[in-house]
Image 1: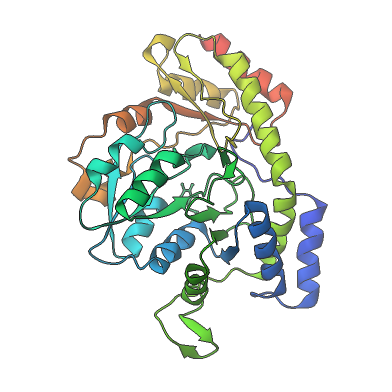
Image 2 (image 1 turned 90 degrees about the vertical axis):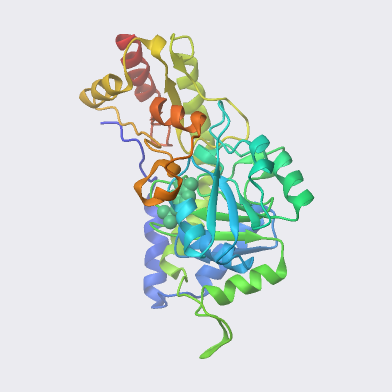
Length: 359
Ligand SMILES: *Cc1c(COP(=O)(O)O)cnc(C)c1O
């Protein structure tokens, strides 16, 4: 069985966890501080604030930018539901736009027509590890005085024009078990803005700057030293993990690109392949359902990210009538294949063989 995702853990993570257990300081403390400093350095930003998970990161980032009920946030309909849910958690309204055909990311040319007097922010998602079109998005945000909050939950270490995804605006990361680096559950917010960073620190700690004195409403969103201990080790390995993903992605592309009806993802140097996502077109001759069935029989892990765009979800009834044809077609055609660091050359051959047999 080749799983679609598997965390890469060894004795280093175990030793780091035991070291924290031996101190007896399990909740937030020095280990979290160290992880934050190292993540900020890696990202080339002033501040990194550790948090319980990626959804909380998006929520706290929105609150720190004063986004509230009555405000609108422009985002993509083709993402994990957490992107939109976080906007709702802040009391604001997600305004969806369609995606680009070949990147699966927010189409920057559709943003301006979605802007209203209520728009406060743009939330691009660097989906599957490929950065969104940050040059155009930054230009639009500057022109209209909008905040950028990046959902970089799938893009640890990804780069756009040599700059880290998550360092263009306020960056939000997840360290869930399937992500490019993990702390089990966990997250991080990155920013160069001192005031935003200070606000986030109070939001994640019950709105308090001094113990038992609370200036604002807040939450308990603090990361534990145990999670941070894992994060420190995983961050040291991240570049290696990402280069393994790139190698596997390049090998799969070499094996699959000439098959009629299989559309391979763009190979971009800044892509970190959180998912390696192909499209199955009618020209392939087999439906995606048939492909999925065959891969299952062969023990080849796979995933459909995502089978339903957010605007078509039952939980987003108020948006169900809107048409986003590019995202809707992507949802019907996408199929993700394993490229995580534990996928071997032999595994790649097995995956390639499956597609050549099916063809
Ligand atoms: C994983 C993910 C999140 C949420 O992160 P959690 O840590 O699971 O809360 C948000 N957005 C995207 C695009 C994700 O992939």
